[in-house]
Image 1 (cartoon, rainbow, N blue to C red):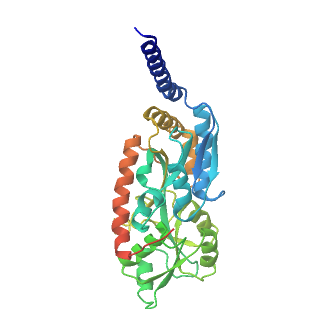
Image 2 (cartoon, rainbow, N blue to C red):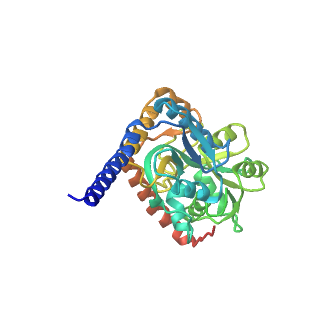
Length: 331
């Protein structure tokens, strides 16, 4: 055997050894995960309902996983900045997205071009949801769905309907409600729910699409009057307030749904460990109680795959609602 051949053979063996050692590193990393803090990117500003939800999850998940889960707020229209940043992150489980329906279910039907694809993200788990509600100005002489229909039909100019932005789920719901109830509505976009509530309280607008966690306290404070919940039941509703289902509109059901997603390509053992951690958090009665106290219903998906299927179902449903509106957005 020549010296040259021996040298080449030694290089090949060393290379194979290095490759085998390198391939073992990810496996060990997956087994030991997590060994450092995890970042949870939230697509809304600090202090809002979604941020509050994310912070409870981060606090409790950190305890279960034995590491810190840090919130990184990246607010932007449609959650584009948050989603694209996570989609481009290293697929190792250390950068996660607080996912909402806007990002995964409605944006694909609204934007001609997105800075991310839903397929760039992999589901970990859905963990919570709250129903949307329709609220009226306190001075509006309506207290339920039937009274709203009768009053609106006396107004040929239509009713003004506040939303939290053009192309948002609240906008789509407002248009959907108008078509479904056979009433004329004029949508009025706001940058946030607080200003919309302020204008609703003074009667500058007639109606508002809102989440139950903020609507109920404002209803109790007299700033607005909840007409109906879009939930399947009367979860968290004040006494005397029903649902659209109760009023005979069984299809008028809509929730804001919260979940966690990771960059596509994140190893399956890491996804399983994250899911198991979230399951432990969501099965904790104390955590469940804290969520329900503010109108957030625990809703753990049966598996990461089940969350993925839920996203696909909701994407189809929202696409059907968006199509007749002919809404197209640009970044």
